[in-house]
Image (cartoon, rainbow, N blue to C red; front, side, top):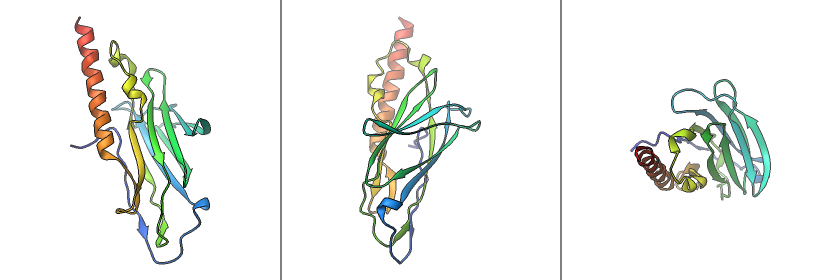
Length: 170
């Protein structure tokens, strides 16, 4: 099953040598937000560390955004645009990165927003949880998405759409 909603391009460059200190290293995240078909300009991308907003930007005319997240922290990225349900991604940058990993590969996100009107009559509380979780995978030496969690959230999304479809018929 291919996960269309959130895709990460992942690779880590492993070379001999000394790693930079974690305080100076960042996890770069770039991405594009669409409505499933067309690019969404002006979508808010809000980064939280705990309850504090630590970054905010708007997507450009191509729906693109770019972030740099510090290591050894946990962030929530919230995507918002009028007429769409907010979407959240949890990024846990806590990691014991081996010294031989000189650079951390950027993550490329393709985010498809959910049109709010499609969910009329449905309980969308389950969609308040992060749609994906990203964390360090020591086997791959990269930050990766928890695919099982994302698949579960996609099923919850499908159930909410089905509930909305049934509500419209009655």
